[in-house]
Image 1 (cartoon, helix red, strand yellow):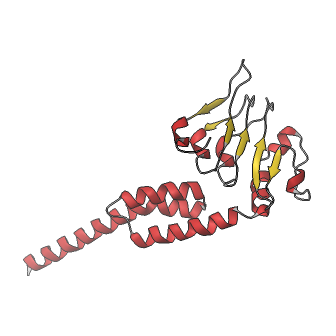
Image 2 (cartoon, rainbow, N blue to C red):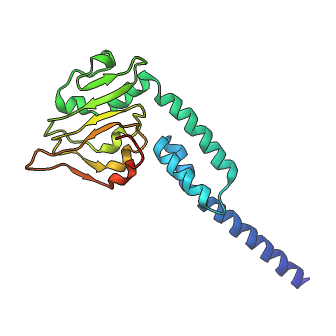
Image 3 (spheres, helix red, strand yellow):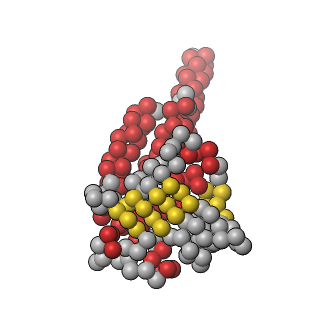
Length: 190
């Protein structure tokens, strides 16, 4: 009887270990799903796919969520909300606001579908922002952050934007404080 109980305990312990491994393998993915961050989700999905113990059902659920979130981000009103949430307009004293059309936002250009395709913050030397605040603008093609001396962030946070132009030049005295590796844009027409 004692041998049978020991064998049963060992089986339960092994099952618990396997469950813990699965939970740990998908924990970053679950956290990214809660944050509803497309770029973070894509990264977490790629990592989870490489984990042997990852729960495939969670990965599939996360992939479905990426599609839903991407569709949301392709709504002009959602992009406007994202831009207003950056509070850049308050720092620069620009005319952005909920009652103002996105096409009238200073420094912003939109495509015929109403999506943000260009963001020009050049010359805003006192503007403080981190590049990652723009990672959800998944229609952004041109970004000019030249002479934004107080701007920071990893350029890799913009890798999911279909950028064709990216200007990060400094003003010659106090350069921008951007980090990261330009290699993240390898293969893009930038």
